[in-house]
Image 1: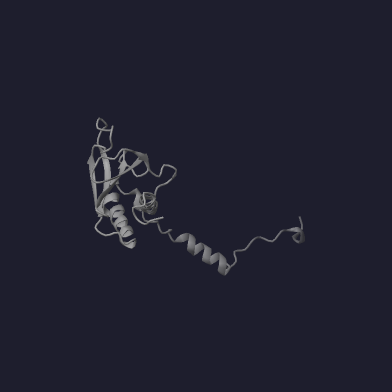
Image 2: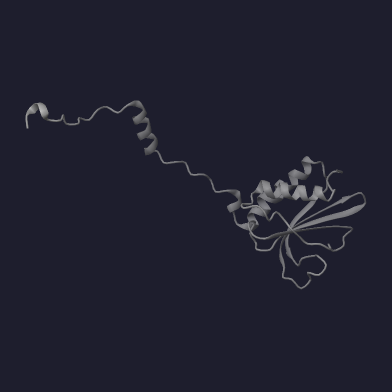
Length: 161
């Protein structure tokens, strides 16, 4: 082969500004996202996040005197006395001379698990147990709060429709 037919050898060249920036970006570790609130242990999430957010939701709607608690008890619905206890969020308040109470049931001790809802007035056991937000693929804090307030509004307990 003659010298004229030789291919020139590649020589290192200075990196372009874009390439240098890409190398610098690749060298920096990516910031890890903090874990989602919903990945907290079940009881911690309910007590530290859901109950305070739900209370704020009631306050925004100017519903005063709502007492919220998180307890494990039997399901207070007619016909469910023999069922095992489950974790529940119980909300109560006095309105129009009636004690209003709703329960949200977490059967699996997991916000992503099966959930139920019941509502009653005047301190009696509820007569109907309904599923609650079962169509959601991934339940978030905002969906739980919104779903609770929507369901109570459906009872016409928050505003007259």
